[in-house]
Image 1 (cartoon, helix red, strand yellow):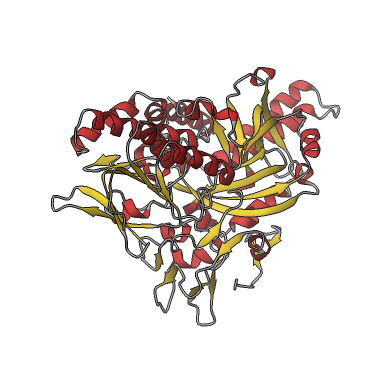
Image 2 (cartoon, each protein chain N blue to C red; image 1 turned 120 degrees about the vertical axis):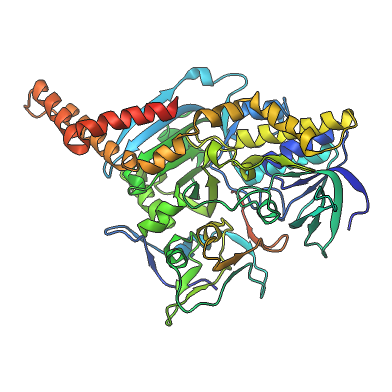
Length: 108
Length: 434
């Protein structure tokens, strides 16, 4: 499921926040085996792709041992930030989930 | 998929798509509306404030059954530093009127209600259906859409794109470019539940009265952005948003920024003891007039966020969405009555009509503001700190005489921003605001 790394707010003295705890409140219909976001194979991520490891509001992006950026998108809230930020490098392939799948906001 | 040909296909069941679909269906047009979510609202996120005027022009008696939370009687604008805020509050009993002007709403509920009205008016709504591409005739005219429902297609005289900020259909069909990281904001939001009496006592409210707080300052850590706190009946919507490119450079996480905002000493007591039941994120197109794409073409019109219809300065978007949706719908009805085709030349009527509304007037008025804010990020850090320090100097009684305090305040502004800097900021802001 979600990446389990603890992600700090990125500033000295800022509270440590686990985004998983927040996503736990949300409703999702996961389209198992059909992720709507794919990262293009790479050896070294661009600056923009790296930024997603802190910028993605659902914490979907993380860096693996080899320094590549990976995504687990089950908790994605479909904001589109990753697509916009990497539009120039084309490293992220972003589609809407199939109709009915993905996040289902109870309140929005 | 669908054999019938429609007068219009509307992509999306948010405020703009619903306004367009309702306007056309009410006038007897054959309308198909496609929504990718399980139900209308399931993909939609907003603060959220409903502006009555825009909805009244579509459904005059909406107050009878729309799911409204609280009518807004008080607006608070806060400039914040790390320990304080300097506030400008406007509260008036005049807002306790028969037909209140602004309401807080919960979008998932409101969008469902609005969609119910659209269906009552006669439009056909298909949910769980993602539009994948526009269909064109050999001349390039848009004639319908393809969906992910078994690759099914549907045809219509005109396609109205109310597909929201991400707007993939229009982007991938070459109708408009991808969003730019420096003109789009990422906002994150939480829904915090509390008993209604607690909300009313904390915010000094009676009955269905509501408060809206908009905040700027060190809460965005030097980034261009704002925070908000809105009172609903039994919940508080709290969120914060900053320009995407600023986030990328800052290294901050959006949820970390929201957490820090929630823990601010002026905010924490408002949320004390609440239960968070949802965490959402959404993009807001903040490029304004200069980022606006083509609004119409042969067989298509764009409405709402997909067309960059957001007034970032006034935090208005849903009213622009509803108004553009309504005007698009009216334009299509008008052409239909005249038995004219939805050609690019004929659909130019949409933009002509929009020019007469607040939508284009306001966006044009503020066309320089996004750039101003982008180039003057110190506005969000330096001034809130200076203001706060000045207020503290002024209000703290400590044996220092008032003339000395005045001097101290003046000096702090001069050393914080230099005299040319202060004058320059004032001039630039005035020029952008005009």
